[in-house]
Length: 277
Length: 334
Image 1: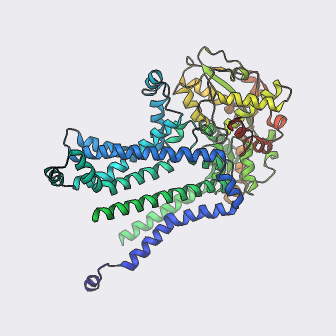
Image 2 (image 1 turned 180 degrees about the horizontal axis):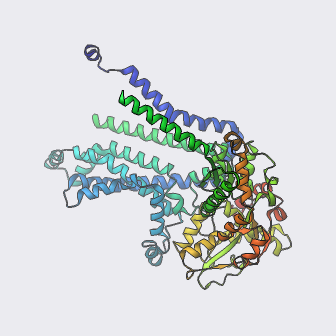
Image 3 (image 1 turned 120 degrees about the vertical axis):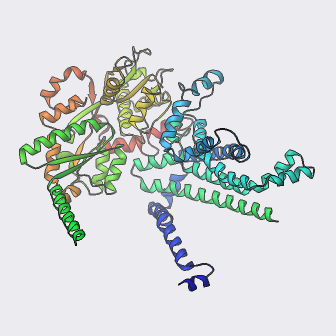
């Protein structure tokens, strides 16, 4: 037994690959192909008129725009949070560290309800924002952005933090001693190292935001053409027993998400190659 | 050996237990959102009545969610013996797939709706915006809270009530009704996905001047949140909301519960069943009970969906389908 095991560099390659493929098919591929199949049953024309309706177009813009915005905000502030957590020691650090993961664990409906309570016109933040700046957050596209930023927060922090922790302080010192300014150290030394991880975090936050439903429906107000997100329209179709229509929208979202993730993965692979050169 | 004996004993015990549980009949009533309290009371009362009549023990379980999603669950295989939903349209959708007999609505009295309800207004205490009737809701500066008719059964009743009112005010002029409904929805700052969501927005978040919704929900909000915070306003006319019930034939026949399921629904029409409904603020059909609780249900001119819209299928198609009236009033530039 032991001898056969030693002979193989990759033990059990056949079995583990088979299991992986079987597992992924069962969990991801088969349910997703069911969505495609159901859509196909509705016919091409039904598909096209469904996914190009003005309400749908408006919802794509909102969902993709707000997701992109939220992912960008998270990339920026997530990097900052990760930097602080990796580089500095301060009292209550482990508490802050745990706090970052909270949006992961919290049921999204809870997040939605709490955010709505705080940002609505009578809420703690909503009231002063309205009175002093005339800014309405809840029940506007801005509210959608807030909810999506909330749910995406942990992704960037958790992907960037370990890379920053591994980054030797000596590298920075070396850069400094060779005459680099602080800004140069950051842009030429630190950023290229964390960029792949940052892109991963960005991609995950973005993907999560596109699919988010639970927290957004509470804060968005669901006004047609203004604050309807695409997942809500899927529910709307189901409510009319239009299964083919619902899966048609689902297919569009799947394809868009897949293309986006693929593009980001390619970008990430490129930046990694660049780093190795 | 002793372990073996122990296991055998346990197995026998379990078997005996499970067969005794089998002898007990169980019903699953799949219902819409605000009927939790109602069917809890009904279940207990029916169990006692059925025991007295047949000697059988029956327990009912209930499941609650949005009417449409419950119907979909039954279509997709949820083992409901009985459905009690917000709209006939949702039961029709189940019947269309052969799970319930097509003639379900004529099998029980009153279009298979043991209780009715209607749509009323809930306003802040003292009614500061002086809201008396539907036409007050379209005034500029009045903020109205209603759920989204695309996702909520109650919201469809709201919409149809407003439409019916506008038709009657304008000699059945459809264009004027459309203008009225458009103006009404212009005053809605948030369309929650369900009726309970709208109640939360209005009651807990303090948003809006008036909530339009189920009469029984309005009473629940007033009784739970304190009579010093809200007033109920009954408009000059409204729609007779008829949430129907039906035995799910395919499932009940397979479970052998068809007879008890039918008895369960018939129990809703008895004096006892009607009184339980009235106590939960559903309008009873039975005259004796209706008279007894007359003080609780202010008289209001009610029109039915069939009078104004023909039937649910027509109403759904014309108003709530894609590109229907509701979509049109939100279309840009209109």
